[in-house]
Image (cartoon, rainbow, N blue to C red):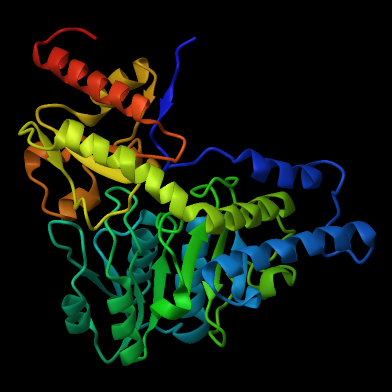
Length: 384
C-alpha cells in the first residue's frame, strides 16, 4: 500500500478523533429534534447551545450573535444578501476585492445585475488591499464592504483592522470572510471592527457541512429561506445537531491548541520555501512569505502546467492543489493570481501546499525530492 502525504488542508482538514467522539452520540442514540419539547429534543437543544457558546467564546463574542449555517458559502450569502434585503433592498454601492472567494465575488456580481453598484478593489503584487484604496472607493451611497481575512489560495493576510477602522469611521457595515484565517489567526470581530464574520468547520478539523455567521448585535438581516424559527429566524430548518456539536468541539480545541499548531505548520512551510523555492529561478513564490498564513504556500513552476504536476504528484501519493478546491476543474487561470499581476508564464503552473500540524519534516523532504524529480523528468520529455 502506497503511503500518502496530504498537503491540502486549505481545502479540508481531517476530522479530529476527539471531534468525532463528541459527535457520535448525536449520530446514534441522541437523535432528538432541538425544536421538540420532550427529553430527547431538549438534549439536542442543549448540545446546540453548548456548541454555540464554544464557538462564540473562541471568537470573543456573545453566543446569541452566532448563527449556524451549512458552511462558509451560505454564511457569506446570508451576510451579504441578508443585510441588503433587510436594509437596502432598492440598491446601493458595494465594495469588495479582486481576490475574494467565489462565494463572495459571485454574490456581488449577481447583485450588480440586480441594480446595485459595485467596486472591486485591486490588490498589490502580494495580493493585499490598500486601506487608502478602500477609503478612496467609498461613496456617499456605499452600504456594504466585504474583504476576506486571508486568501484561500495564497494565504495572504489582509490589513483587516485598518480596513475595519475605515468602515467604522464611515458608518458602513463591514463583512469579513474568515474561513481560511480562522484556524491560524486569532479572529476577534469586535476588536477588529467587523460587523459580519464568516467561519466554517472543515478548515479547523471539524466536520464538513457546517459553518457560522457572527452578526453584530443590533444589525438586522433578512432570511433567505422561509420556514420555521430556527437560528434566530434567519435559517429555517432542523439543525444539523451532530455537525454543530462537532464544530463547537473543533473551535474549543482550536482555542487551546492554536499556538502549537501554528508553530508546527510554520516549520514545514519554511522548509518548503528554503528547501525548494528560495534561489530557484524556475520557481516563483505567489504572494508574500511574511504577510501570509503560516500553513499555506503557493508557487508556480516554469514551463509546467498545474494539472500535469498535480497528477504526477498524486501518482506518488502526494496530495496538493492548484488553488481553491472550489475551482479545481477550472480551465481559466486563477483570478487571484491574475489580480496580483502574476506573469503569464507562471499563471497556469501554480501549486498550493497547505499544511496541518500532523505533517512532518520527513514528509516535506519526500515532497521536495518528488517535485525536483518530476520537474526534471518532464523537462527532459520523459514519461512519468
